[in-house]
Length: 287
Picture (cartoon, helix red, strand yellow):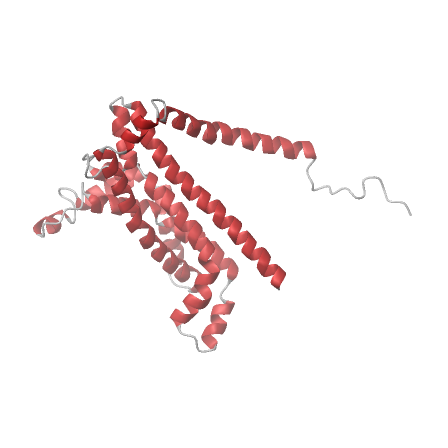
């Protein structure tokens, strides 16, 4: 019995020319939209040499902007990580009224412009705002100070960890956790011994995405910061000021630092993905 011609051909497998065409189109798009602009930023940053680049990064305003950016990220990241884990656990392990509403509210920062988020903070803490008189009576200042920058960054970044963890925890299910509880494990023991090890990679991915967004946030922070040099300017705001003052080379120098920090998070993400893949392969071989 002879095989029919083409019997071994998979009709769902795309032809080689189509695969290569799609790959080339993806590479070309990434090259034009991502690699080329970043390359131009680096070229402009070092346009007047390394010494000028270093001087641009070590001015008092640039150092202050870097410190404020890292300060804000250092608060936002652990808060979002903790909130993300607790929210994902509640959304995937419990049924309650308003669950869909909570999911929609978590996605709200993705849908609302960061500028609108900043204006909301102005309405809350600015002159005539809901909390302005109470804060002023206690000598507390939120708007045009560090607390407003942290709050604005928190608003625009808090969905990242939750949205990484919810699909992962839904896929994994709760069988192992239920088994641990049935054997007498406490809630904390169950969380640290079973839940957290299972979600650690998703948590790390969410934290990295949150970090990149926190360091690069512009719109919401611009509204609430007041643009006070040396006090409330983050790196993105400092770059805008330099560019508006026609100090383009210094602006590109600081932009290269911000881009470098973002690329560092990207490298960490690739490393984590590779490490996760190796861990999964080792686990499959062991079993």
